[in-house]
Amino acid sequence: MVSIQQRILVVDDDEAIRDALMEILEDDYDVTSVDSGFKALAQIKAQIFDLIFLDIVMPEMDGIETLKQIKAHDKNLDVIMISAVDRAQEATDSIRLGAYDYITKPFDHEIILNRVDKVLLNRNLVKEVRFHRSEAASGAEKTQIISRSKNMALVFDLVEKVAKTSSNVLITGESGTGKELIARAVHRSSLRHEKPFVAINCAAIPAELMEAELFGHEKGAFTGAHKQSMGKFEFAHQGTIFLDEISSLKSEFQAKLLRFIQEREFTRVGSHQTIKVDVRIVVATNTSLDEMVKEGTFREDLYFRLNVVPVLLPPLRSRKGDVPILADFFLDRFNRQMNKRIKGFTPDAIAVLEAYPWPGNIRELENLIERMVVLGEENQFIDEKDLPFDLLFHGESERGEQKGTRENKGLVQARHAFERLYILRALQNCRWNQTMAANILGIHRNTLIQKMKALDLARDQRED
Image (cartoon, rainbow, N blue to C red):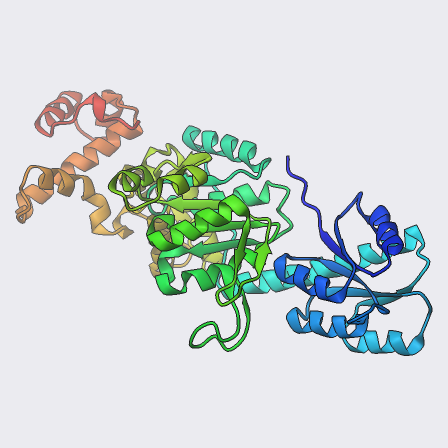
């Protein structure tokens, strides 16, 4: 179990004052103290703080000048000014320059803690609003994970266990299986759930911009860097960063990511200042990193660092019973989004959806249901005849390709394929009870048995 504490920096040239504040704060917060404004600036460039206590009267660089430079570095960093006497002008100047509050010595234990609680609560609310606006702008969506499959139940159990730790997680599975949803589930179930979840598609970022995107950059670091920019790792401080398509990382950045994982620190592009952050790393890929390691295209040491807890997502075709409930879920969502009232699916349509192997997995199913809602009639059910032709004959076309018969089958072959699929569905719906299936089909049981032999239908073709 990890303990995530907020960081406070105490800046005062009086050791007794620093010790007093440390004693008040250190039970609940991660506190660092320094004795000068210069050291304070070095600290905030090296790591992230949530709040600063800053003395006004200090030698060399006083608190007002230090405050100006702190705000120039990060205007959102909260500062509480402290002074030995109550001076109205100093208080006014401090607030005008961006200080959050002004207090005088000596300190009352409860007042200090109340002020800190107030500042940090406000800071968390501001960060949360900023974060959710950022997610909304990028179209991020926190979709439920819908499943009743035994295969997925094992995944859920693993997510619950790994969420209680800060261990790195490697999620693997075919494209469209919902790897980001699992990463979000890990985050939501963890102690970091109130902090940002930042998702990055590594394949979508040009290699030359990857370092600046993840670690940030200084003004003038490269052409187009008109101002200092915070990287995604810094933004995800105390939260979770999700690196999708991790296999697409170039070898030079793999080395930099490995160093970050080992040291938990980095430097922005164009800077020499080391920044420390606390993030949990979850990565995903639909490519075998094992094979890439063998081929020399992915670093073995990085692979072992990432693959602390492996999570393998099963494809939709092996998630028995999930297609109907996912289809209903997507239908309800798109009905609401498009203000339509498609009633549902007929049993024949569900049978086709369950028989299809879904090579594109959940994403393919979702796209299909969206299309059905767009084209569907109000207050009607989606029937088998409404589904795309390739769903009906996918299995037959695959079988033909495997035998090397890619040519047009013609009317006779198409009728043969449809008849086989139609009888197979009837048998599956009746759990291969031939008498019941024959009654549904309107033929004699002996005729059904002959058809099964002619069409190469056997009991071992029932659903897994």
